[in-house]
Image (cartoon, rainbow, N blue to C red; front, side, top):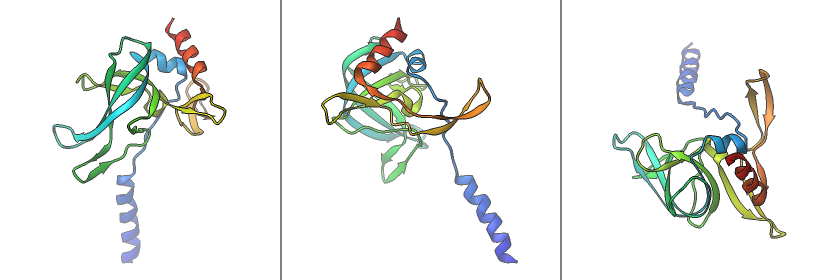
Length: 180
């Protein structure tokens, strides 16, 4: 009898710890429309710290901008994201990717909701296209979004959605067309 009471209680307790990140699939064109800046940049430094209330950890990454595709971003920008590690504590947020020094990315950005001069990635991982070289030497970008099931509001159906992977030149061309 005690076991049956314990199991439902344990189940309810575990459910309270469950969390989810809801991501609405965005095309490159929608990412451009939702962003004040689109830049090609290289991560140069990252650090994490608590917010002033000591309730949330943020990770800040300083980027050196190598090319502006939309907006007038300065040559150095700071991107602020939820999650990170500091003071022996770690917070991870689904859909948020952090960068290491030297990593290159095409970033779709907007001003941080905190209005503190930092920028945040538009559409979580969808607005973060990592740059890499293919074995043939071609420059490729991918936002790393795996295939997921997505609810399509227009058709009221669940359909597969796959993240965008393409040549850098193709992404740049799509951004330029969307900006005009």
